[in-house]
Image (cartoon, rainbow, N blue to C red; front, side, top):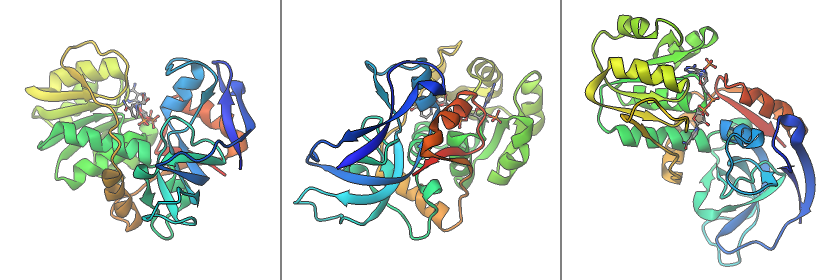
Length: 300
Ligand SMILES: NC(=O)c1ccc[n+]([C@@H]2O[C@H](COP(=O)([O-])OP(=O)(O)OC[C@H]3O[C@@H](n4cnc5c(N)ncnc54)[C@H](OP(=O)(O)O)[C@@H]3O)[C@@H](O)[C@H]2O)c1
């Protein structure tokens, strides 16, 4: 079977991206072969394209999440069948392809009628937001820096559902969006501490940094209780030892929890823009700018 795969032999902007046709290797035990319908574009994809983040030698392949249809399984597989509609995380970056192989243990069933672009853009950000929630434990107030992007949209809704009072930052354009997710919104930039204090005069139990690391760290140090957690996912060095790095934790159970809530309308999921696979360069260039509302998605 052949697959058309997004590949880059160099670092740079979107013009380093190419679509190459490759012959698939035989399916490995424990893997399912997926005809991809949609796959989210995350900052890590764009940062790997630019060379800011480097996992291994070139050429690079991309894509960490997907939704699609199972086309092949190992002979001894009993839980899943060819034709099942699924979503989840890939193994290594490889979901920006017409056909990709993913670990069976990562699969979550796509609820009937859930939009493909929505389904294909949840795994990475949702499992990261769930990991942040797990790291914070039992809290009653949370300051989120960068609440309108992919991870932020998930984190704000999870925290609000848990009864946590959330103040979240975003650009001016995304203030109403944040309010719709249940957060008290404010803008980042000069005067952040004063604006945050006006919305929540007491110290916060915790802060989560998803954008603007340096200013977000300084504001968190002034507004979070002395023993409160300050966590970051940005992988940008923070100017304080108090900031603890949190990373995605793959958990199909966590993903299914969130997917169920999007499917029945308890949570919302915004796809800011869908791009045909052939326009991946545009999607990556936009993602590099760092100002997303919800998710950008490639559709196949
Ligand atoms: N460690 C991990 O496992 C892991 C997992 C996922 C993501 N990440 C990283 O975490 C970060 C966020 O990911 P994401 O998917 O949520 O990204 P995203 O969808 O691009 O969202 C980033 C958000 O940051 C906001 N922002 C931009 N400049 C800001 C500033 N100066 N101060 C505060 N917020 C600002 C943007 O808000 P406006 O659009 O309103 O300007 C945007 O909503 C990225 O750096 C990504 O690489 C790490």
